[in-house]
Length: 312
Image (cartoon, rainbow, N blue to C red; front, side, top):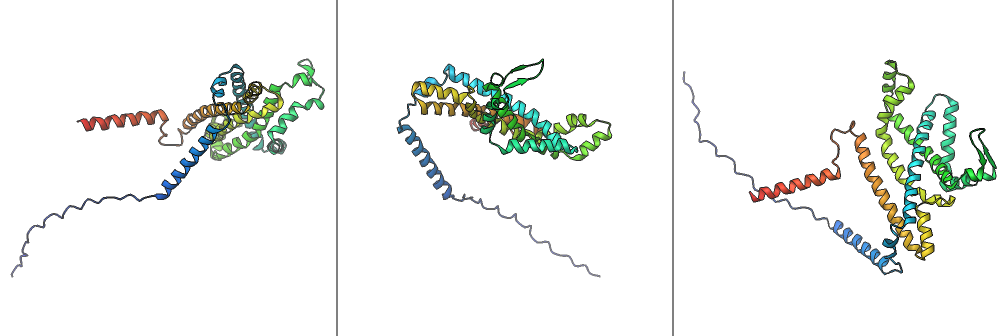
């Protein structure tokens, strides 16, 4: 019996190394054209404002005027109080809207329908002129006075803004409550928790993740909506700058000053909204987005590491 032995050939040489491919980026000419057009329009707009009959030196001159600062303080104050009233009443209305009781649910629906269906400006004027309907306000031994003395510009502004905001916050809160799975409520009731405790300890904390972002937007929008309280003679930022403009003759300049203050205040609120959303996103996101300070720190550290590696 013969055995056939295969001949072992020479060892194969390793394959040649792949050539280094040079990646050529795609040229996006449209981006460059749109960027040039946008910059040209921006420069044209800046030149138009610079060549106009606007005394830009008047803006820094009256930026920290005592009357303007009082208007800024009152604007921030009425914004905070109106949002607090709107949020508190909005939560109550949302719970009423979701109630199985048809009476409370209908009352909440009617409130939301009315206050969302009429302009804020009209509501402010109605509150300010209700003295035509009610001559006196009589709360028995607690309080009694004429309506004109009771309905001050501050109270008219607070009720007009806060009650209108409650209608929008009711829908925001209702959406947040309905976003929580019903199994959470059923499990809480199975553990013996009451409906109020379940709402306070289980449902609301989970619903805040849905409620907070639109609430932050409503807060910023409320700050700008306060400019309408000039209709009820409340001394806000717009009222202050308007009066300063009329007394100094710099009417347009004071409007630009008011716009600058509104931009500053809304920017501060936007930063606060970012951190608040980041706080309530801890339970839903595996990794939270970096804050602006953390991004700056990371960029500085990466830049120093690159320099250290190059020197080494």
